Length: 251
Image 1 (tube, rainbow, N blue to C red):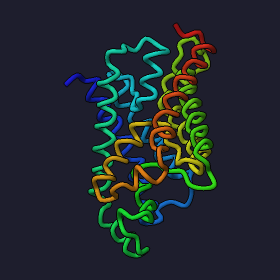
Image 2: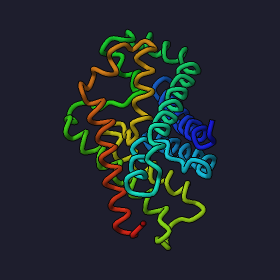
Image 3: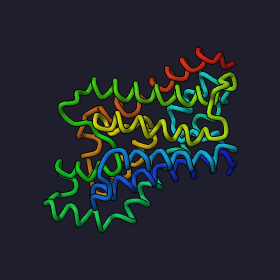
Image 4: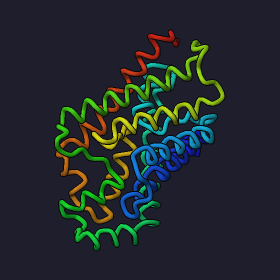
């Protein structure tokens, strides 16, 4: 196994495991008191994963960011499928690990709140794994939120890592990117749970389907699982990367 493939699996696992873990702890045990604490864990998890794996893989952990580097930088396009596979594998294993650790807490929460897993009301625990938007947020509003959020994330990544950016964060770039993700989650999570990452959403969503939630993860928002949480982030990342290249003349 190439080290870059292993690093994408490991890095995605670290980020998604810590992120899903804090969401699971919050839903089942009231472990946090606000969005910022959840967002901070996601941001710190991303920073840790980048520090560990960036040397070998570039630390993408996100199909949308991989596409951005492939079409707006010099990342080899032939590696796109393998990067996608590694990211999905890492996120799926992370979801499985969180479910294994928190299964008893999730079951207890469902019993206390009279929730039947697989029925429509079980969306409250399905949120541990996948992401969903709820009324009054419309489908189009959710698409715009995920597009803009991922655009800003990609802009931050391309801006912070551009050699032409003399005011970039340098050695603390992973921490700076983690802080940016934390900030973006605080703003966008009330709208769409702030996905910005097709692998982070799709693999855990699929896991929740086979773990007892049935058709709920793919039916609650209709086609939104594809348009909002896969296509919109990809478009946003490509646009943000283009803006970053325009500002810093990356070749």
